[in-house]
Amino acid sequence: MKTSIKKRIFDLVFCFASAPVWLTSLIVCAIVQLLFEGRPVFYASLRRIHGTRQARVLKFRAMVRDADKIYNRVAVPVSKQRFLNTPIDSPLYTPIGRIFERCQFTELPQMLQVITGTLSIVGNRPLPEDVISSLKEIYPNTEERFDSPAGLTGLAQIIGRDILSDAARLEIEARYCHIVNCHYSLSMDFQIVLFTVLIILRCKKALTVEYAHRFLDRFDQKKVTSPVTRRNRLNAATEGIQSE
Image: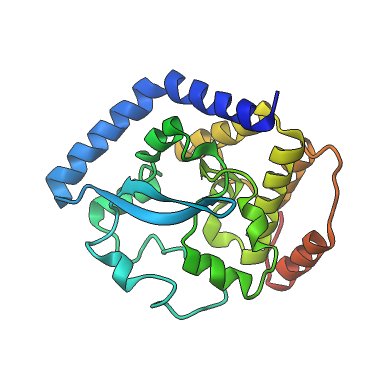
């Protein structure tokens, strides 16, 4: 069976099996957002999702209105980290939005896009083109993270995107895509989803970079370390990322 079909089956089975939980949460969050923050309840942003394909990705509005005009890769000076991760204590977040972010409810509307086939449950997060361009100025392998469909959660999210250097994150994301395309395992995606749920419920600590690589090693049958991967590991080390 082709990888794309196996992954699609996993997505649909998971979506429908967990529908009572995520659909109820989606409705409750939408009502809370409407009552406390008003409209718009949702926010749609054009993102790269797979290969060169783009789509409007839906999420709950967690920030003040028109925050995208204030906080974007064009307006924010390029710093050490080129992934544009908004700190949770940023004043751009609304009070309800900050709660949604901490509980990872912001992406709940994307479950509907998993059903339509726009996104996958597990995969690298979609990115705006301006962030991709900024990353490619330093990391020529950036496009590798789009070799498999974008998803709601992934290893970068359960490690903690704020503690990952760009090099370390790109390496992990590229490795995930390689495994999906070469020897996809339903068990790999299932375990990533399980880790995500346990971490949200505070039943498990966030993964470390070292643990994430050991986890991927179990599914990477060839365990090939490319020159790009070796260079990224060196960059990660020099940027002070601790894998412990």
